[in-house]
Amino acid sequence: MSGLFFAVLLVLIILASWSRLYGAFERATHPLEYAPQIRAASQKFGVDPTLVAGVIYTESRFGHDSESSKGAYGLMQLMPSTARFVAGHSGIRGDYRDPGVNIEMGTWYLSYLERRYPQDERLALAAYNSGEGKVAQWGLRPGFRLRQIPYAETRDYVRNVLAAQKTYRRLYGPELRGG
Image 1 (cartoon, rainbow, N blue to C red):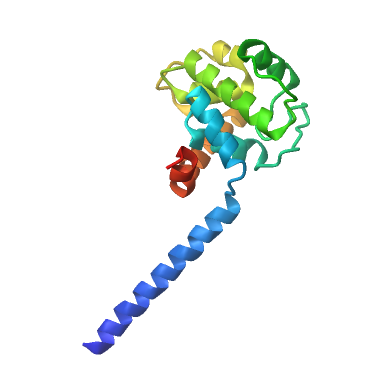
Image 2: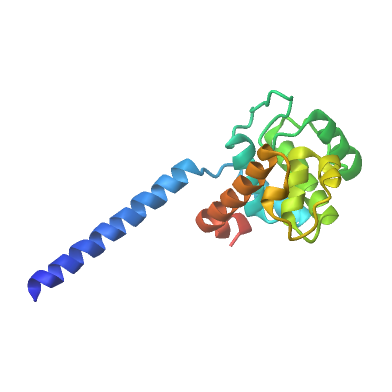
């Protein structure tokens, strides 16, 4: 009987160690920077902070000076035209290349898109990636299947943001919500 007890104990120790190692690995691969800015912008504009973190992770892997080949910049990969649109409609001022301003503008834009597509967050994410005009052309309705998005890049983007959001919710949810 004592041999069985020690075998079970050993398995439990191994599982506990593995769980800690896996958690550390996930935190290393899914860092959380700018938590106060994410939390403040999310509260201000009514957007789930884990969604904002998921967008930042997918867009830039938290690289504040990331720039795409198309000219999108910063943590949330804002195009200059999008930054001008947000500034004109939100009253947010400042250089969109500044990390704090970038988070605030990107979060405002997410809230704008969520209001435009209230029945399906995936439509808001598709519009964040491809633009509102493209989403309107596609004629997608709430409850659509991801495979109905004609652009593989946008399909993958929506899938990746939602997966990252789930990870950020599990790893940092209370911290991002201020609890």
